[in-house]
Length: 247
Image 1 (cartoon, rainbow, N blue to C red):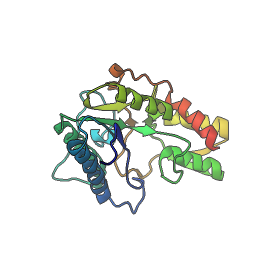
Image 2: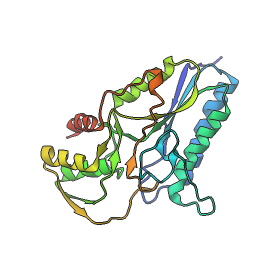
Image 3: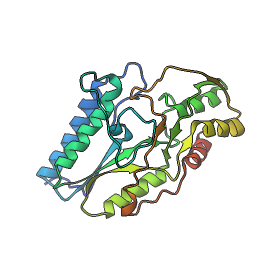
């Protein structure tokens, strides 16, 4: 008869979005392959199972001059699609397919930023660049844009998963948030004070993100709160705790 599953969590992804040799086709191929595998299982064998799919704040597009809200829109220049659009489109495709399968229990968790002690320090994100600079006793070079990020704590993310399991029938996407986001300047001040980080601010640097510049990459759409999700950790608390375990 084979195994049956009450909950399936899909957090399969591809290599770092910041690597120069990233195969952007994988954003679509890998997402489609495993997403279709899970949906086929639900439709053919166990339509009562819960499918939790890890999505991304990238569904809102490249423009984050302001944080996302319930009424944010993704403005896509369909005649001039660029690499920075690829990942967001792949995630929108998956989420749209999930909403179309409305008879199934599918929840998309849009993670904007997540941080734990198990992070790959060579991934090229701002926070990993900071940690690398501390470890290697190097001067961190950064630009003068005071970006804001929302680092979700592992315990808060796990709590949200449990809330989704207990929520009964839902077919929806939730924006995942911490208790409070944190600015780049506050992160630099913390590392400078606690770990003697040396950094240099320059007027402009090439944006390394393959999904576009995101100055305020977090959400104020707290639509997971009605199912009982209440994050306990602010972003800076997550950084302090997890970095302490790394350094």
